[in-house]
Amino acid sequence: MIVSPLIALMKDQSSSFTEKGIVSGYVSDKESTDKETKRKIVKGECQLVYISPEALFLSTEWRRMLSRDHYRENLVGFIVDEAHCVRKW
Image 1 (cartoon, rainbow, N blue to C red):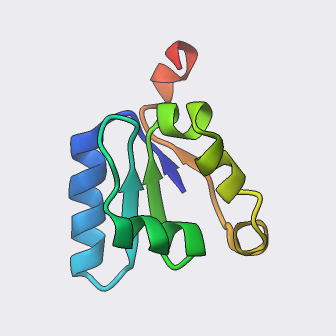
Image 2: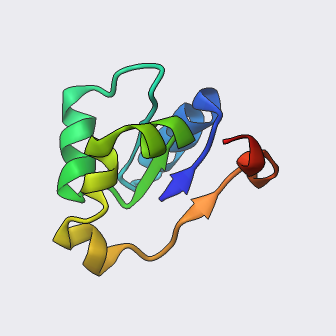
């Protein structure tokens, strides 16, 4: 899971990885995630998940997702992009 405040970067990175055969998706509080991508993320079918700090911290739906068995058993890393912004989050 990659926490990133930059929606454009999340879109570009997700598209780039998907083109290379790595299933990925992104979640932002600013725009809605399409139903198929949301389903894949919630079911744990994405190998990479990009999420905005606001979506992660302000949405109980996405925080609960991390407590599901699939994420608890398979989450390998939690990356914070633009970490110098963490103090502002």
